[in-house]
Amino acid sequence: MNTLTNKLSPFELKTGLCPCSSKCKKSSTNSCSLWKEKNAEKAVPKPSFWVTYLENLPLPINMKTYLESYFSAMTHHLNFISENFFSVTLWALVAGLAAWTLEFIEMYVFSDFRYLIFLLLMLAYDAFAGIQKVKYLHNLDPVKYAPASAKVFKDKTFSKLMYYICVLASLHGLAHLQIKGVEVTIFNAFEYAALITIIATEFWSVQENYAEMGKKTLLLLAYDAIKSYVTTKKPADGN
Image (cartoon, rainbow, N blue to C red; front, side, top):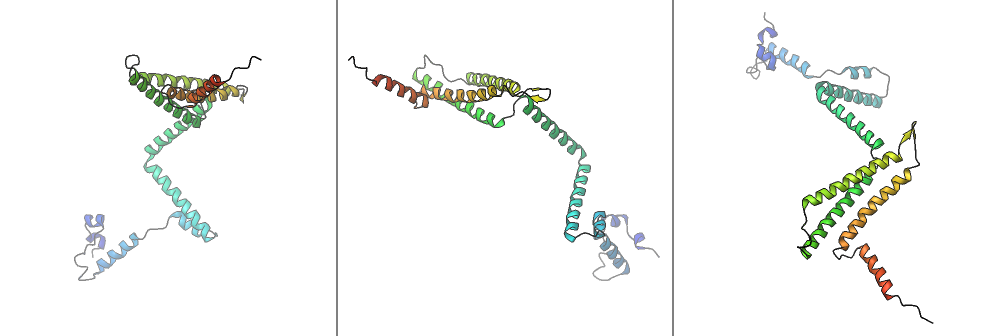
C-alpha cells in the first residue's frame, strides 16, 4: 500500500496543499486526516531553547518572563546582524569614525559648540545688516556707492569666518595644551577674553551698519546722548 508521502506530488509537498482538497467537503478519507494532523503539528511553533531552559529553572515567573524577553531580543539582534552583516559593519565603521573625529575636534580644535551657534547667528545678523546698509547707501547716492554684490558679500563673510576659525582654534590649542598629560591652564583667560571680544565685535558691527542708515541703535543713542550733554552744558561763570 502506498503511503501518504508517495501519494503526494512534489508540487503538493512544496506548497502544502491538501492532496484531496476537492474531496474534503464530500468525504473524510484516512489520507486527508493524516495530512491534516501532520500539518497541524507543523503549524504549532516549537518553543525555543531559552524558553525550555528557563522553564526548568527555580525562578519567579516575572523573572523568567524578563529573561525570556531579553534572550529573545538578543536572538533577534544576532539574526539581524548575521542577515545584514555588510551594512551593519559599514554603519559601525562610520559611527566609530564619526565618534573619533568628534573627540579629536573637541580635544585639539574647539569644544564649545553652543558658542559657535551664537557666533554664527551674530555673523548672519551682521551680514544682513551689511546688505541693508549697502542698499540704503546705493539708493541714497548711486554714483558714489556701488550696489550690493553677492560676490563681495560672500568674500567678506567667508574671509571673516576663516579668520574667526583660525583665531578660535589657535586660542583653544593655547588654552588647553597638555604637557606630560597635565593641562596648562595659565592661558585660559586669553581664550575667554577672545570669545567675548569676537561676539562683542559682531554685535557692534551690527549697530554700526544700522547707525549709518539713521536707525536708532545703541551706538546712535549713545552718540546722541553724549552730543546733547556736551552742547547743552553751561559754561562756568567767570566770577
